[in-house]
Length: 190
Image 1 (cartoon, one colour):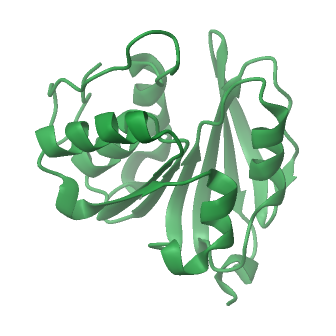
Image 2: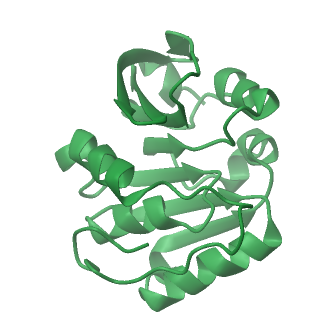
């Protein structure tokens, strides 16, 4: 696993041992950032179910101003922190060892509002997917935010999630990216 582009292009990241994690592949990560394009520069980025941190680190490498990483497994968070340290990005990162639902319920923990929210909940974990669908809070997203959810290609996500409306679905083998755009200023209300 490596950083694909930007300031840290080519830098190797530590990957998981065993099958406990399913990191976003280089191919899907490349596609994700191609989709986001110039939105990355200067953005506040939220990486939910962050795992090794590869997606958020890629965002920082490509010019995001700050990334908040949320991962519930302390061992995986230690790996994520090592990857941030390897890339000298700890000062641009906020790392929470928390369940996504708990993080979303605690506005004081947010580093937002966020311009981009990326979530990669465990495939086939319907409880975590429900959290993503129903847990939006006012103030989490900026007025023109983009939300991208990575899921198994067989998953069917709703056409709207809180203030975000499905814009497009992209498929890469067994993986799908669901791109949502915020459709109202409801997301910036306090």
